[in-house]
Image (cartoon, rainbow, N blue to C red; front, side):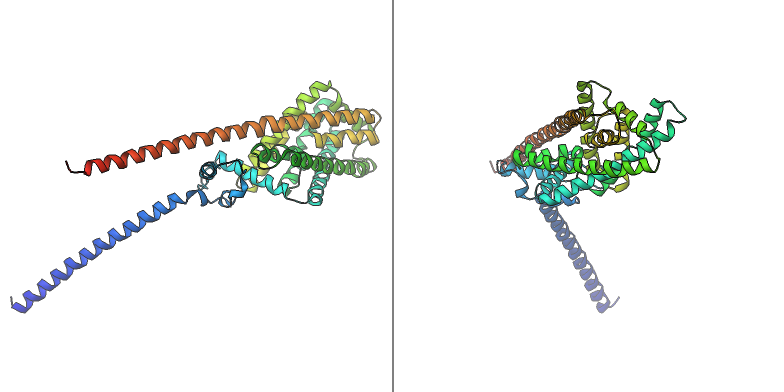
Length: 368
């Protein structure tokens, strides 16, 4: 072999070795950059999320009494970045609090109009139920006809919930969350509840006056059907109606929670159908639908007086409020606070372990 060939081979070997060294160096650089990127992502986890709600979570969304440490902890717990799994508990609650805060910031006219619309829309449920009851009562005993007709109960609720109108029983627990977390004052909540109730009741009464009267003239049902259904609602002692209203308020609060947990419209429709259908099937007392049912009997029937109507409306409004606030808002909010305390404790433990590991490595490197 000639010297020139040997020289070229040496050069090629040297270049190859140099190229491999450069590649190894590049791999090390890329690995270092990836480690730095991962460290940066870990440091910014609380402000990055696939959920629009938690992504927009800002300091002003918290009460002034909450410390910076608690704010960061809540952001960390609320982070929900895995769309292949169900939303986290904290993510649902934070989203509900922020939605409630947006409702607090709406104008009075907007609130009343939305609530008034919900009162009209929810009346569709009763219109369908009463028509089905009149049809079925001719071929079935009255009790079975009412139960089967009540399966149409979810129709108005689907329209209201998916259409995002303000329905009192759905908003009862949601609107109380900012107050429970000391973000909004109690008097604003009471004012907001008053506006929503007024809009729902006025809208429901208008629907009863117009649409139930229309149904009578269309011979879809009769006055006796209206009276029979009203007695089905009123035929209990007041404390039984109150207990039934608490359970209905509880179930409506659960509906709001489940709707927030769902990621798509179809899932929300299914959830609303299942929960509100159960309310109708069990004959539980819902204040806004019940208002339409009894007010229709007051206008067109022969068995309901004004005093009886007002007493009934008061009892079920209080019952629905207790069910929504106590059994949904308070309990779920307390669970969230327990989760926050647990995360804070785990974070403190992790920091202590990390410091111990750093000190241990430093001590092992010191010369003796």
